[in-house]
Image (cartoon, rainbow, N blue to C red; front, side, top):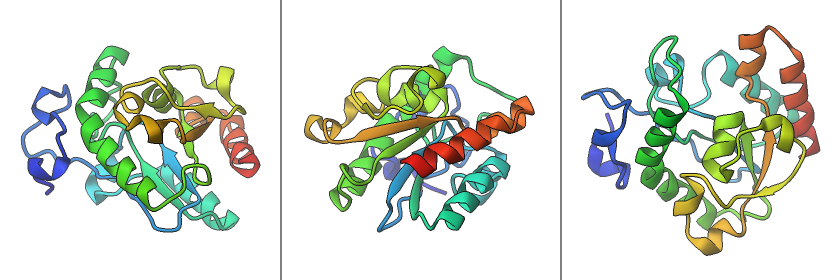
Length: 196
């Protein structure tokens, strides 16, 4: 299990998701990545495996990347699984995001020390990932645009010179189709990846 000292200043004890002994799920930063995917928070499978994006929706994304030959890294603004069937209210999710932000920013800063942010964008999957980096929440409003990250609980803690150089694409989370029963969300996500 990751000790508090390894979490780089994360305020775990203040987080609405904090449970003593509950394992957070660290991000997966891979050398040579061409894109950094950001979701929302880990699910049950991710908590069990200790790896982000390995559940059913994560498999959709990873398999499509594999088929496309895109090497990627995977990131969540919130590091702990909320529990089966639990969707945190927006205010609590933002609080959890702020508690995790120092740890998240440490990882992002290290990643971009070896990857050019102009060549490795952040690909924001879903409204909460969008909010964490930009302060906005509507995927449909910003889908297809390239955004400069500037607001949001993760973005505001990044060093200003790095923040100005990172750009983000926005699309639907791969879980959107499963939750809605509408396969068009996954089709749209894949099309957005192809256009990136």
